Length: 129
Image (cartoon, rainbow, N blue to C red; front, side, top):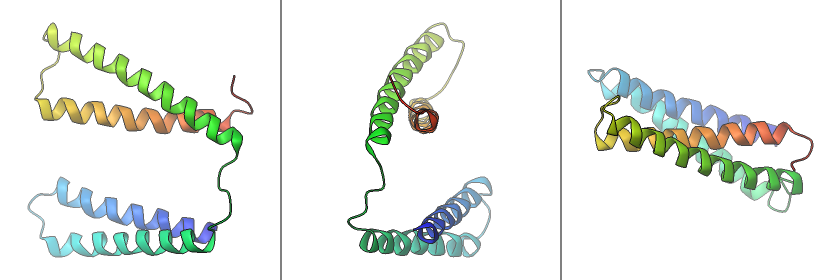
């Protein structure tokens, strides 16, 4: 199972590298970034399909991790709601300026990162109360 996970990780890294290179250097030719995106996507799809077909009946999570994921999603939602409220006040007092697109990207980034951080933190704990 580990080698398929390594394929998933490598595919994600290559895909993100191709996207980030294109975003950070707008003048770069797409012939440089296309192989990163293509190979990364192919690795993700191939490793994901192999992992899904080979380990169809194997449980990847247990009851403790499911509970940790539920709590992490709840905490992430609460943290994101608080972040939105703080952001509203910062915009109201004109301490921060940004477009709607930037604001939505900030909120989405905080939401995703807080979910991963809470999942990581709660997944390491022995029991969640």
